[in-house]
Amino acid sequence: MHQIVRDTAPQDGNQLHHCLMLLHGRKSDIPSFPMDIRRTQRSSMIQKYYDNDVDPAAIAKKTIAVIGYGSQGRGQALNLKDSGLNVIIGLRPGKSWDLAKSEGFEVFEVAEAAKKADVIQILIPDENQAAVYRSFIGPNLTKGKVLMFSHGFNIHYGQIVPPADVDVVMVAPKGPGHMVRRTYTEGMGVPALIAIHQDVSGNARKVALAYAQGIGATRAVVLETNFREETETDLFGEQAVLCGGITSLIRAGFETLVEAGYAPEMAYLEVLHETKLIVDLIYEGGFTKMRSAISNTAQYGDLTRGPRVIGQESYMAMQEVLEEIQNGTFAKEWILENMVNRPTFTALTRADEEHLIEEVGAEIRAMMPQFKNKR
Ligand code: NDP
Ligand code: MG
Image 1: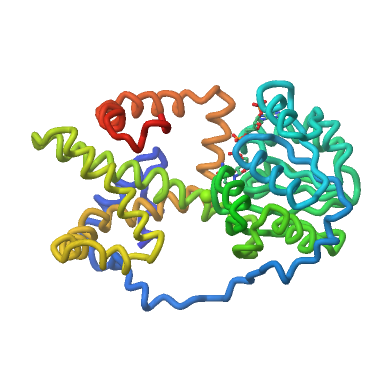
Image 2 (image 1 turned 120 degrees about the horizontal axis):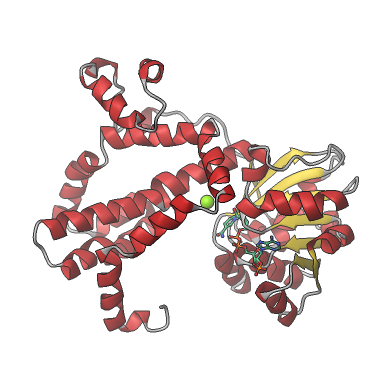
């Protein structure tokens, strides 16, 4: 199916529509969606690590420079410090610098921190990393050091090319920085991924695991992946499901109800507010737990209508989105977008901020006591 489509589809970004037109008359070529997942075999068992698998000595005497003190930088650095590790922070003067200082860290310019450290964890926004690496980190990345990331974008898409005589690893918590911090203070941890891009020392995995323990991740579980798999699944997840998928689904449901004449307040409560209640149940116990909590009517509607809303067209769009991640189209687009000061990012963000669902939502939340301190 894909080959037929790709050979004839125009390259102008209108591929999905073209695709659908083409496929219309060729139903027999189309794999049937949704797939029966019970037929899908698990191909390999992923490697898992816990506290007992860690050799803390791998990192105990090293100086760790955390570059950036935002979401991940703050969460990871505070946990490492509370685990007794030697952490310094690399930043430019500004708000984060003052915050890191006030929370008890030694703070240096990025180049100075990179120079002092044995392990350099880059936790500034992905789109700034290549420039900061080129000017300040690369020149101080001497033989035997360890370069670390929490996301594989810049390595996988070739924006950062480290020298051959350093270890390059990833320790990527599967949760936002404030959760990394909060779960640690509660005695648990957020699960994390590790990956090894370069292992010159032969110790790269040990260092990654010891760092993962320092941020609390081995109290939960650490899974081993590779930079390509982490980057591609992470981008796909946020685009198709977590961020892009869910906002588009909610917006479409809201617009459908409002256009049909229902009160926007009703539409908001139904399709946005209640999403959290359902997602919490799925998070706790999968689809099974969620379905045991809803009415039989809701469950019948879920099973028979859901696959019509997310049907053939959505599966095909997901495949295209995944291909654009795999072949670098998305990465190139995002890198170029940043070079021209983000016109698309800015315009689309503004348009969504002005959407009726945001206006109605702000009004409704202002009336609800549970949101008092969250605005
Ligand atoms: P943030 O946007 O929170 O990072 C902001 C921090 O970076 C601030 O301290 C900022 O300092 C600093 N910074 C930005 N630009 C520069 C610069 N040019 N020089 C020095 N410091 C700079 O990033 P995240 O924590 O969201 O992401 C960091 C990494 O973690 C990324 O690779 C991301 O993919 C990954 N990740 C993020 C997750 C998340 O939940 N956020 C989850 C898992 C991985 P200042 O105040 O001076 O601007
Ligand atoms: Mg992610």
